[in-house]
Each structure stands twice: as structure tokens, then as C-alpha cells.
Length: 321
Image (cartoon, rainbow, N blue to C red):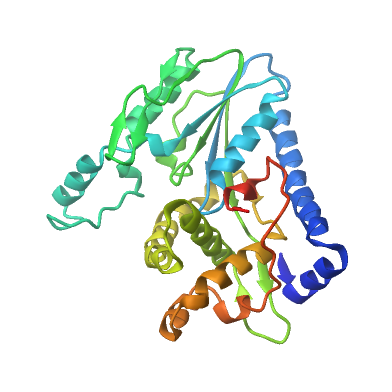
């Protein structure tokens, strides 16, 4: 959906940002309800089952928070749910680097390693863990330590079957057939999550695209959690987008369900944060940032610095009040 900024601004000035938050959260909650009905329809006739839900989507779509909230909603129906992050099944960084050098993908000594390709993951170990769980075995999971670039076996806790069970697996490559095929689960379901809404300005060609929204989300999160400024996020963005075009976009065709993680109210908060970050940019830097987001148009959007969000809102992943 494409929203008009001026229309939304008028709505907020008349009804308050709280009313728009309520509207945005309601729209997303309807998607959850529909998704739960779809999942229930495929399992309600089974007294016992084990299923695997794969969650994929581009950067700053809210995959992690979405997966946790979906797990909570499914647990409330009496189903045991375990969460797995595909990131914990990365090969050791040195292994991946050496392998890509050996294959001629990167020159010796290069740090331009592709950590988003499916071969950067220990697919065999991942499939073994999932298949053992399906077979009823207690499985000790690995955890990838990004500080040292190594996978630590058993540090990710354990998963145990109880009767009615679901595994929710989230990650950039979970929609890849090499990841989701070959399991003897009672069912598999693949969810693609992304903010799909865009925003336009009356009398202007400026437009905030879904990709722009994701960039602003990531910029704000990077600033708050990694002390990275907007230029640092912009520096990484081409690599992020390249990985999405290579690995995520071609796999959308495998999705069983598309979940729109847009929140209509978020644009006022994100624009105010980005405008503040851009205040000290040089004219040349503003031009560079404008290749990703319409920085001049964003500066004129109504500023909202504080939001009162439900605890289970996916947008909490990007909100720092």
C-alpha cells in the first residue's frame, strides 16, 4: 500500500499519534490471526505432529521479533514451539574464508568474504539437528559466537519434542531449497516477511520506498546498538542489498505466506530520527544519502520522538524511545 504523507499528517494532528499506532498494530494483528487460522487448518485433525516453519526476509524486516511473537501466539494454543536461528549454524569464519579462496571466489588475503551464501552455513549439521528432533531425540544446539567467528556446540540450549511441536527457523537463507527440503516433518510452511508499504508526498516525486524504510530502520538500530552513524550504515548498505538480490529475492517464489511488517505510524518516528542524524552531514554527504532515501523530503515530515507501543509489537525491534 502507498500512503500519502500529508494525509497521515492530518490524521495525526487531528487524532494524535496514539490513534495511528492503534490502527497500525490492528492491521498487523489481523495478519497474525489469519496466519494462525491457516496453520491450524493444516493440523487440527492431528492428535500429534511435528512441523517446521521457515521465516525469511531482507534486512530490517523484523524476522527475529516476528518469530518470537508468532511462537508465543502458537504456544497459547497448546503447541510446543522451539525457535532456531540459522545464524547459529554458520561455519567457522576461517573455514568459510579459506573455502572461498580455494574455490577462486576471492583472492588470498581478501576480507571480502560472502557470509550470506548458503555454503557459509553448516547445512548438514542444521538438517541433522532438525531431523533428530523430528525423530524424537533431545537435541543440543550450537551457538555461533560472532566475536570470535566460531560455532560453539551445545551453547545454544536444547530442544525436546512433547507431542504437538513446531520449530520456527528464521534466517536469510531459510527459503533456500537446500535448507527447507528433505525433512520428514508432518508439514512445512514458509513465511516471507518484509515491510511492503511505501509513502508519497503531494506535489512531489519524492517517495519513501519499502527499501528506504528498511534502511531507516537499520540506521536507527545500528546507531542505538552499535554506535554506528548513518554514513556507516550507508557504507554497508550496497553489500546488504546485493545479498538480498542474490539470495532472498529469487527465493520469494517458494513462500507460502507473505507477511507485511509495515506499521503505518513508523514513518513519523523514523523520519524524525533520520533527520536528526543528517543535521551535521555535508552537502556532498546528503547527496550520497539521498541515493537511498529522500533526505530533503524526510526533513519536512512531522516529528514524533516517542511512541507508546504494545510489548509484543514487532516494531519494538527498531524503536528506541
